[in-house]
Length: 128
Image (cartoon, rainbow, N blue to C red; front, side, top):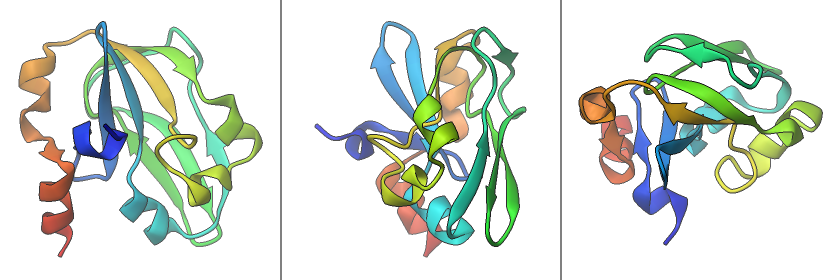
């Protein structure tokens, strides 16, 4: 089963993937990466940083623009993808398997915070 089949997406183009055990992987959708173009810089938070749903947790810069990245649900950062900090172009090649941004431990009511997130297929339809 691929990440894409099981992830939820926000209207601001972040994805959320449930790893089980209350741990979630967060990254940017392929659509967001396409819109940004060639990514040249990624700034991610430190481990143990806590964010509420909707807060900015990262900044990504491309040759076109700089974008803030928002938390799809509340959580505490438990892992940061150092690979995308050191080689930001990884995001252009693969924003799912290798280009995820952070992993968090959910701290809020996930069921209610996920209400405004869309399954990937519905997200893609919204874009059309």
